[in-house]
Length: 207
Image (cartoon, rainbow, N blue to C red; front, side, top):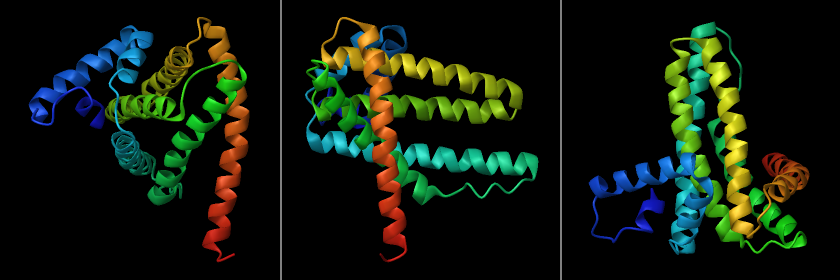
């Protein structure tokens, strides 16, 4: 992943990158504020960040399609939800719009985070989400109920990680302030994403 490249030199191979990613992932789970500071201190270029966004969007989309196929195969139901291109567009838009809205809300609340700071943090969290999704797909083969409970727990923990990341990026001391910004950003995000979906629909109909 490009986030590892921000730390390592261009001469470092994949064998050297994997321990760095593993260490950063463990640090994110153990001390998310420290992990956020570490990511932001990498000084990644905008090109590296956008490449990372594209990469995690593609990986998450592949895992999403796999999970839908797995569910349909296990239940015999046809959900009609396996729409990878649409999911890829929505997930990519979600990261970009999410970073924009969080920056805007944050500045109104005295935060200092820049758009690319928030975007790289969201991309990293999506990367971890892909790992969790892969684990859930494997767990689904053992127990659907257990996989559903694990998905709920991971979702709640993911929100806590995001709040910690936002707090660190915005330079706040209060986690409550970060949570409030996420709530407000959620409202703005839904509105912005709704407009995006409408634009996609209008474009597909040739309007």
